[in-house]
Image 1 (spheres, rainbow, N blue to C red):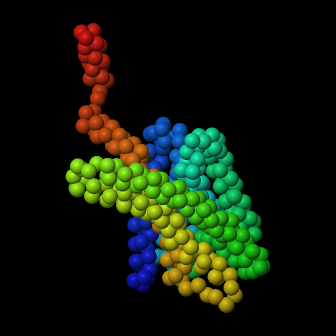
Image 2: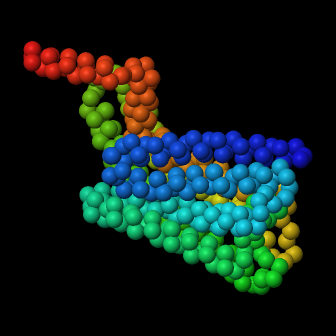
Image 3: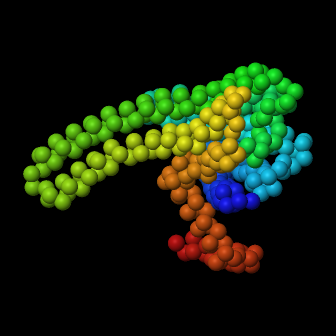
Length: 339
């Protein structure tokens, strides 16, 4: 292994560690909070975290072994299974992000009719479509024997078989990335740009009301006015920053890999191994960043994590036995009688 391969291997280890912990925390919040389970976005984020967790446990280690050994990490059957999951989980994760953007668009643009337009049943149908969509492409690749180890990416992934037609494989690859990456990117751009438009409209209305109020309150302290104006500026930047993160992270993490996969379809193009591995590692980094972008930084998830951690601390600091529990029950009963 040279220095570049060592750095790439270390990068995968770090990404896998962060992805494993963060996605497990999202699933933990979903399991402990009935409020999150009742909400529609919780279904999409749980499906996304489940896909990212499987990618972390199954696909990242295979790429790590491929980098270290510079050869196929597993046997043929297991490598085809990992390739199948790589195709399935990547497409499913992309479509889950698109579903989340649709949910936020409906919530912002149609707030009064959101409960009727986006129900849990509708969310489950969208998740089922994502699974069927991803499964269809994965099954076709499996039946055509297009799942194998690729040294250019040090991964078990889509790969042209020597016995297959290059034209058929090229058509499948274009259709797969078009129906997964391009479709998801189009949905993300359309929905989030509409969300940004509505957010800016509301910010403008709030700014007008704030300026009118400050104009009427002539005796207000200058520092208060300054804080109000600073809050206006932060409010304008907040929506733009969030949407830029959603769309920007999707493009940065997936676009290099998709463009590389489409470029290698040309017969005169030979993909550099280092670049292929880097583009693959960028797709893995999305699995580590998704929990923070969509879940863990939200106040609702923070409260659940604090509640769970407090329960664990109380359990460790005050271990209860059956005898103590019975005494506590008797004490509570006596207090109730006295009061």
